[in-house]
Image (cartoon, rainbow, N blue to C red; front, side, top):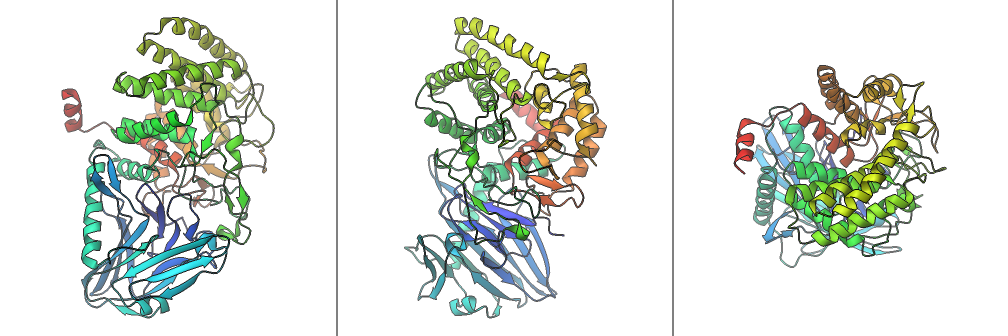
Length: 599
């Protein structure tokens, strides 16, 4: 079964997906949201790929080099063995400066014997929207398209260029390389230089991973998820992507296909909070600056999402020439949800802002700006918290009074009060405390459904929704409160399907949901743990971990019947929730606790 068996490589500027047989099938250059060079993921006929092909006698295994984002695919036929080490260069160039060019390296490591392979090199530039022509030159292979947009990409290699382009068999007797570069190189690459880039990149990731604490349980899963979240950060601005792909369907053959190569304030803020807890504070600081830069005017409302370079207009359109993954049309670029109102983003942002002020104190360079943002958010929430919105799941139909949105409005004011105390702004504490109590009483009165014995999706609704499980996580209600325990059990009864959770089961804009939203399952596991059902929670967690792909990566959704991964990939939401659950079941190793006590 196809289970999105891809590994992700990247350098915090762009990323690529490589199949378990070393076929590069998704890559956008020069940046995450640029048009694709290879998009076989979305059209296996015209999308384009860069494949390493071997005879059927070869056994193929794939893994990551431990604690790095370097993907190793091993090909073995008896004594004839070689490996492909795929990576995108990233390493320190100077103080707070990183070398991260729009390039993919494929280092071919000769292990033993005389292994043979051929290459299928088929770039299809600009989302395969026009003809891509490839020419063999003296020092490189160049591919170009002159459709709506002129695009080029360069391939450098130690192997015979004509043999590569023509797909002829190549015998490996020594190490070699391929370098896919968006720009023409000034200095000619070589195998030796490629190996140096590999080692430099390896050292970068080892140093980065060393900051992640060691845990007694699930250490490998936490570390892999943390690296995956890092790969979804955009170093230039501090933005965090929801996922590396567009239009991978939530359900095969349906139209729930969206472009996730943008920065949702909600997703990104949740990611940043987890990353900061793991000790990766630079990621958090850059994201906070991203937010500060986005709010120049004190009365400007936050959009729910932005482009990774702070773009505010994310016009959605379809690429009708691509048939979509397994025929799931349409393929979309851009995302029309950017103009939606979702009142929860203010609470999520304030939660992150407070966590950082609490952790780092008030000596932040932008402390005054952050206090200004706090006042601005409190003002917006005070004016608009009573209004309906589209909710966390971005319903494209009528607005409703979603419980999650109301709870996060409460969170915004609760955290604003805490920030005010840090800055010793006592008058604001008094003013906002009245508002905080008003919102709390409104939720307790209108979100509770006595018949269901649960907090429901929206005011007056009988429908259950996994997002209300976060009421406890955000401190709105204690875990052992009978109302929360009852809500967890009600959600289990109605939304759980063999341990996997629906987001909700009521009809939305596209009918009834038919796949499990992975983050919701992790939220449920987290809630079971919090209400005291720890053994049950851990058994379910172990079961769900088994649904990841061969590298332990998760997409947005899981099919209830087949358990195959669906939705955009890899999904930041899924991996941040995995980390939160794993930490619940773990305790930091003794060494880590001793180090923390010394700080």
